[in-house]
Image (tube, rainbow, N blue to C red; front, side, top):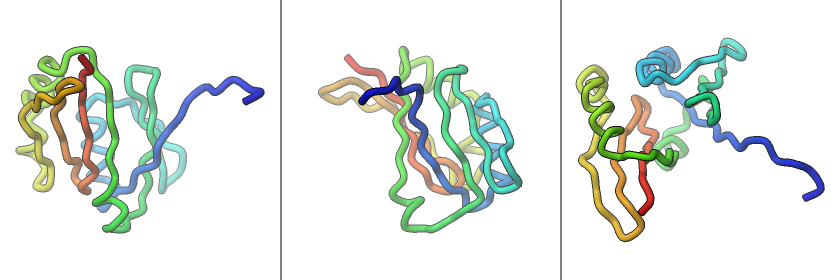
Length: 121
């Protein structure tokens, strides 16, 4: 490459766009509305992803996002305290799993996108 890369962002869809936007705001992701069908969510002013008002079941059911965290125990505790898995019918929070590379927990968003919150060894 003859240029400096600045970021990489994934696009994820939403079955119910309004509900998904509220879910990500409840996780304290900063929302910037780009149009009536798309927004970008910032995580800690460094990482971002696009949420769009677009849903294809096979695509969403195979969408995964990995967010590396420095302390998976604190992350899981925060996710659990927020109680989003009780507020949204489709949201599920897993227990922390220990794997050969590190530890992680999973959170399914209201549409079914699988989030991995992981900490490397």
